Image 1 (spheres, one colour):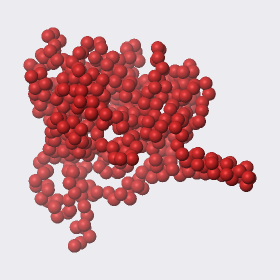
Image 2: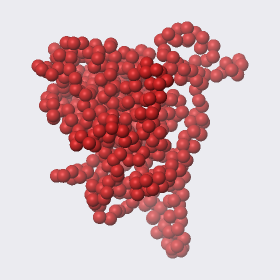
Image 3: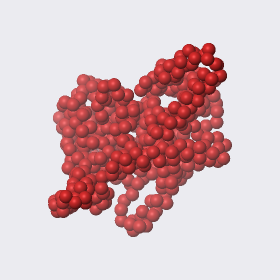
Image 4: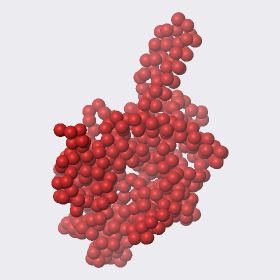
Length: 508
């Protein structure tokens, strides 16, 4: 067999050899979009390529850390604390701001009336990489060696105790980054400007600063009089309410629009919703904003939930919080990976959703967003800050023939919002998901329906079946030739009809 015949191609979710390609084209090309086929028709890269690429990205992110500190200082007279900083054993007058144990971290949250402990993900400040491990071990070795050499031979036993103590993880530690980010609230320090120099300052992105409202942007539609039922739509990561309003809203029947009141929100930090620079975008903050923006002002008592990807986590948490109010729960591509024994939940989830691979492209993008704080900030600087330019060029090139609502969702966010939401919601809740699913199984009496695109390369189909294994009554529907986005986009009319049927059945 010739060497060329041994080349393996990754096409439309299948691994094929050269001789199999012609048959595949005849059978499947008509089912694929041109763009999807183009990106799929590439040789599967070897693992060593991913290792080389991500090693270089580790170094680049390390360099960008200092570049941004300098730029932030010159433009804003201060630099934004990043998660490259090492943990400290104590702080000054701020008290114990950040408490961490293995896999569990909490911060002190201050409100006008109470003090709360709030959970964050340790993946924010612990992302193992070659550069991270080398720098960490080098600094540790220098500190320990310096301690030993300065004390002489009589201190050898003390040095051994120091090494052992450093190797064992302390029960509670205090992280300087969280401290600096919350000092504006605790010590009266000046907060960072809104928007920051690297964020977009257009009217769309900053409308919340002039409105005086600290609530989410909500696109409400449907019944206004004689409302029978409410529906809440929660979008996924780096998206917006337009994911629902531009696809499903126009395709619901007249009878549905006269019966159901529809609410699609822009999550905190995304779309037209507030993007506070001092927020850590925790689960509590996201849930509180949904309640304050939809459930309370619209006096929603019972409601259906439709959620996609990251939004499924918020939907489960919201359902557990309001078990008697949820009439049906529809999840699209829920990111649930059962936790193996002796694995740390947050770190395991990060490796699953961001596997440090260069292919498929969507996995590469997720890896960049999750592993590299400063590279992802650079991407936001180039794309999100200049989103008006990119939207204009897209319309110019396509002669305004395509709608750009997906671009709106992808562009209208800040790096601070995307970075913290990704880690605190997707990674940070990994240890809670099984508890949520058990609560939904035992306490909720409503129907649970799960949709998943068979060609989803970001969240594999197995995740939906994992949910069903925890909630046996859940119904899973796998849609052929659809991926993470086209599970809705491109089949919006069919999906709108499916949702109407789900809601009707829930009322019977």
